[in-house]
Structures are given as C-alpha cells and as structure tokens.
Image 1 (cartoon, one colour):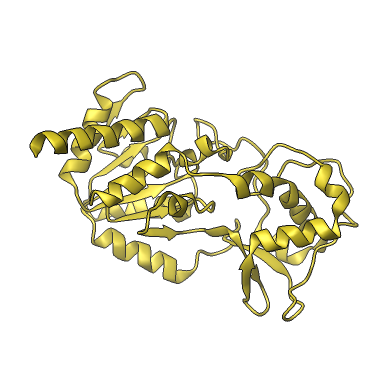
Image 2: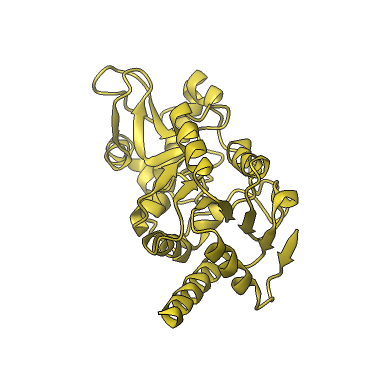
Length: 288
C-alpha cells in the first residue's frame, strides 16, 4: 500500500492521478465528510469508539424507556443535525459529479448533506435522519414536523443543552426520561423511528443491490472519511478488491480496509478534497 502522509505535498497529485485514471469512480463516504459541518464522528484515529455505541434496533423496538430516552436526546441533538450545512468535502464531491469524474456516492452518513450540496447520484446506505418512519403502517413524515410536536408536548426540555452526538441525538445524562411524551403515528397509532438503519438492523436489500450494481459498473473505488469499521460499508471495499478494482482512501487514521488500498492519503478531508478539485480543474483548463 502506498501511503501519502499529512505533510506530503505530492499526495493531492497522487489522488488526482487516481481520479483521472478511473473516470467511473465509485465513492464511499463516512462521518469524516461531515465533521466540518459540525456533526461529530463516531471513532478516533485508531477506529475505536469515542463514546458509547448508539442505541440498537432491538433495544429501541423492545423497550419504551429506551425510546423515551432516545427521543428526549434527539429533541436536543436535532438542533445540530437539522441546521447542518454542506461542508467542503460535500461541495467537492458534488463538483466531481458535475465534472463527470465519479459515477455514484454511496454514503454511510444519514445527514443528507451530499444531496444538499448538489450531488444527485447518491445512495443513502443507512437512510436519512430527516425522515421519520412509522414501524406499523410505514408512513413517512418529516423529522422537522416531529420536532415541533416533541417541543409542544415537552416544553421544559427545550431549554436543555448538551453535546451533539453523531447519530442525531445528544449526550443528555442523569435525567429522568420517564415522563417524556412521545407521540404515536396519527394514522395508525404505531411507534415512530428515525428512517435510518440502527445498529443490529439490516440495510434494506434494495439499497445493497443498487450499490453492488453501481460498483460493478465502476472501474475503481475511493473511500472518503470512513474507517469502514462497520461491515455494511467494509463489504463494498472487500467486493471491489475481490473484483480486482483499484482502491484508494482519503482518511485520517486506521481503517478496516488498510490492506486493500493501492493509495491511502492521510490528510484533513475538506481541505484535501477542495485541493483535489482545484488541481483537476486546473489540469483540465491547461488541456483545453
């Protein structure tokens, strides 16, 4: 594996050469793309958890107390997630798509910021936090509308503040959540869940199939801002390697796929992606 380190000025040139050589680029993104938008990431440079693991699907579905705690924390955390705007990495990837330099973005993030930045060929592998799903009747509704209802029912919680967590909630601890009032689905009385894939829950088959089809039509894979410690993302790096596709990564720290990369660049994500687009645009202008 070729590793271009943080202070290596040639690293962006190496990444630009990789992009130029593989115009049908399959890009997988993770939390490192969104940290500059104010959304915390899950893991440190070694790929280990920075905080307790998020709630599991089984705990959320099986325990009303867990759901009350989740939605109380989400009421506070939604301020960060709901107000987040695309950062440099999102803008750069949208520019690469516009320039015809990538075929698809498969994102593990649930924040919707690739879409907000203008990317259109996006597969939201783990769903979208800005949508709420009824687990009984499957009705979808905007998370912003649920936020208004949660605030109406629980006005005393509006004044609370806490550090935002990467999965759309906040680190509220030591509080009594037992009286927190969570609305039921107005259509059928079912329980609400964010329309995202929780830990312990399967990624919908149609998304996996769409991502595999996109990978099969690509000629290389680029990982941007992901440690790939979660198997749902890592399996695509493994599939690319098994298919003989070259892999590159832009990520600070260890990843699960380090043994698979032809090129790994360890630089801050936003500045590196911005520099990449500028270099590619410059070379295109000189060629013209």
